[in-house]
Length: 141
Image 1 (spheres, rainbow, N blue to C red):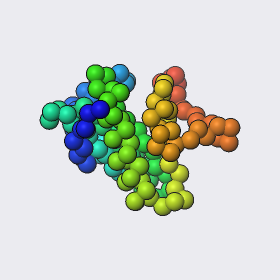
Image 2 (cartoon, one colour; image 1 turned 90 degrees about the vertical axis):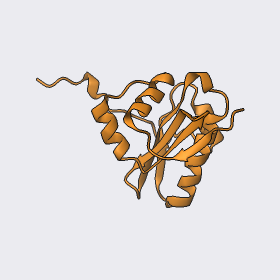
Image 3 (cartoon, rainbow, N blue to C red; image 1 turned 45 degrees about the vertical axis):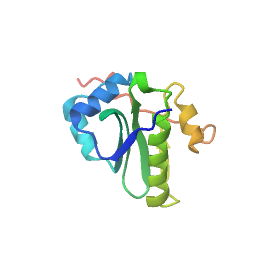
Image 4 (cartoon, helix red, strand yellow; image 1 turned 30 degrees about the vertical axis):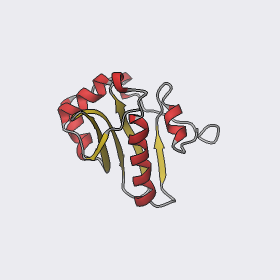
């Protein structure tokens, strides 16, 4: 286990893109990253030896709907408790700042559901199914 230093801050664009890349996640172009980061409701960065090694964010409308996104830990630090520390900070913030009637969601890729279920998240199926709008497949004529 590694005890990271957690800082409540939004990462800059370069750090955001580096963390996503080093965690094996898809890249986001600088213009999209800038707009998305500006819309963060809550964000935490994990540091080890003064280097950012993880991050997690909450986005949403601030009242009814919240989504956890960008939970990223660089590959060489995965499995060391950093993701757990980030999720603990996010769920504490949600518990302290979000109305009980709010809908809080996330998309779990791969085996990440193991981390999220440890923090109280449940699968929504069969009551509801997660869906995406795959714009990358749409072409304007």
